[in-house]
Length: 161
Image 1 (cartoon, rainbow, N blue to C red):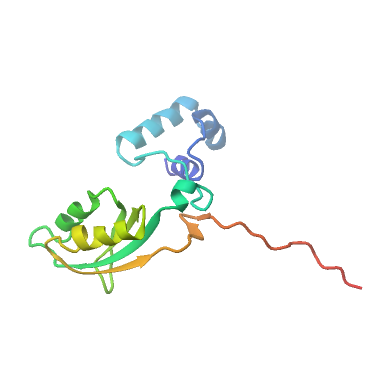
Image 2: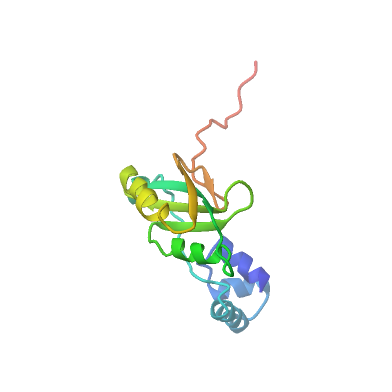
């Protein structure tokens, strides 16, 4: 199963036939394993990875990382407030963190004002939120093992006399 998962992580467009050839399994065995992974919730979604610098819609979005300190709730810990936060459509990712803050949220908005209003009117007003610190993403160089910047260096070797 892990071998098939690794292949799909690298290229989710591989066919069952391709995976079968690469793993020396039958096509029906590969299809069965993939179906089980999907049914068990291991594979949640197949998606295209888009270079944000080359996609106008992505390039025009404002992305912010928000560090949040919260007061965990009795009997629910951080889960109850995390549940309330990740339901906002602006929230793209949410992580429980160790260190100086409790939750890290990545959000996306159409402009700075929209992000600022989300933080001030929605996020910081939630019961249990003690403080927020917002950092704006200026440029993405690498994400999830994908390098987004093109290497523009000249790789020709110099001529020595």
